[in-house]
Length: 154
Ligand SMILES: [Zn+2]
Ligand SMILES: [Zn+2]
Image (cartoon, rainbow, N blue to C red; front, side, top):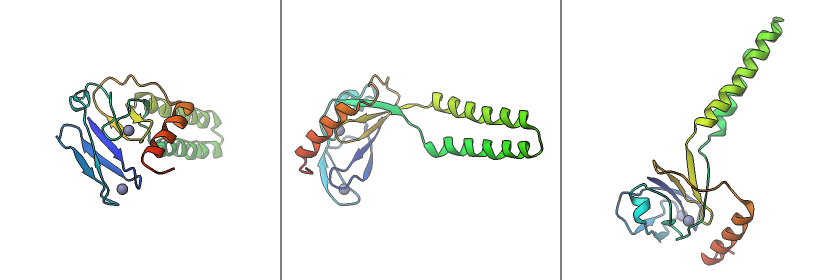
C-alpha cells in the first residue's frame, strides 16, 4: 500500500511505503517530525483501518481522478468536432462530441479508488478492497475541526 501523509504543520504531501517499518517521518518541507503507527492491516495491504498519521478510523473513498486528463479529452473532442461542423458535417461533429464524453465516462468508471482520512487528509492507495463510503461533508466538518484543535491549528 502506498500512503501519502499530509504534514500537520504545512500540508506538504509526504509519500510513505507502508511496508517499510518506521515509527516517524520528517516533513521534507518544514522539517516537522511526526510519529506514525502503521497497523498490520495497512502494512499487509488488506484494509485501511487506522490512519498511521493521526490514529483516526474514519475514511472516505473517492475516485483517483485527474480532472486535467478528462478536460483534455473533452477539449480535443470539441476542437475536432468544431472542424467538422465548419465543413457542414454536423452529424459527424455531434458524433465526435458524444464520443469524447463517452471516453471521459469510460475513463472515470475504470479509475481505482483512493481512500482518504477525514481528519488529516492522508491518502491510501493499494490492492486492498476499499469499503470506505463516499465523502460526507458533515462528518468532514466535525472531524477536521476536532483534528485541527488537537494539533493546535485552531
Ligand atoms: Zn511540513
Ligand atoms: Zn489521518
